[in-house]
Image: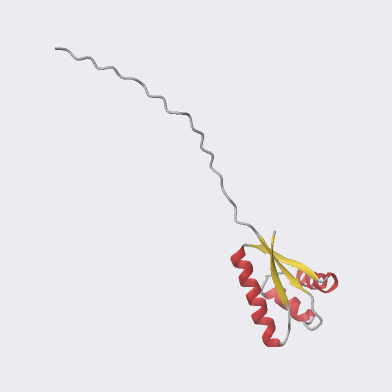
Length: 105
């Protein structure tokens, strides 16, 4: 007795896979003007904490003063939260009500 095996090709449905990379949303750290915090303190803070050049720090401080606010940096949520906390922890002991907030880009 001879047995014959037949094979049948099974066709798989064609699938297309697209690789998508999601980029984490970016956040703006916004510094707000007040009537108490000195421009010198703001310039020093921008230079030391945010690593701005002296010229850029002065221009940003002036923008905060004249416009009421300025975007200091655009970064990740976690880094932005850290900046907000650091500004507060540096300003409050000196009696400055300097405020920074986060806004989605």
